[in-house]
Length: 343
Picture 1 (cartoon, rainbow, N blue to C red):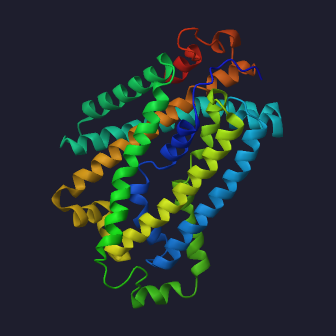
Picture 2: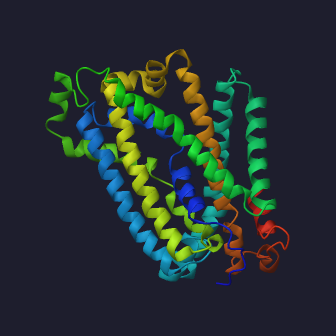
Picture 3: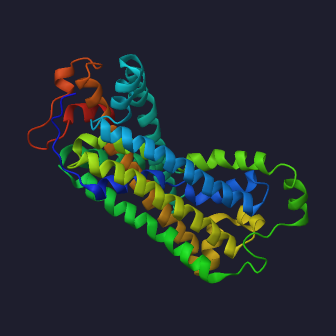
């Protein structure tokens, strides 16, 4: 595969893509879902978070080795082509082009608009505001990632750092709080009776939403052609990024259980925990955190998506391949293929 992209990004951008895409808005709502799947058994829920992290890290080690061996733009498309052949790579690439990335970007933009409205006290049924905000966010981020050399990478790094702050504060204050005097792993008698005979089943059920919480890291491979030292930075970003996320997720959920019992977390959610820890402004704090998280995830998916049509073009799987594989001399970006993804 011919590579014409400028080597513009370092480890920090690759790392922030892994963390920024994976830690999306879902983590603000997952704690209650996992506890419900675990039948309110905190031990099973925490064990599932640990197991999910181990599975993700092992997967990351595999992808890191493949990514270092095949350091090409396109990530999964390039890897699948070399491993499984042209036909499967073609199908994966077109699925990402017309279904996966457009749908996911639209969904994240919608939730960014919803929680921006919540933060600003705007009626969530105001479809004009939701549609306008989502459109502006998508247009702004595509514009940044198409018509600048590396601003998109800088936004990704900054947004990832910013989204960690509210979750990190909740984790720290949760450990300090200790309001749950029953203990982190407290279970009611009813819970003990329900979970005693089927812990493995409950562990499996809990893993389903947890694996979704770890999803998305593999798309850092789409910018392999943009990395200055792809063989070193891509594997390091995947492994360290997933390791950080796994530890962070487990610590966050233990901290939540240090504030509320399992039943209270399901009833009150992250908003209740934040209000307990930070007072009446706690809900606003969470809305702001979700806004930043959605924006960072949206930027990461936008940056990744702009490389998909380009990869298909240079592989000969897109009509007018010379036009869509062209790199703009001024911005050093695949402008034509990126505009296709924006549309």
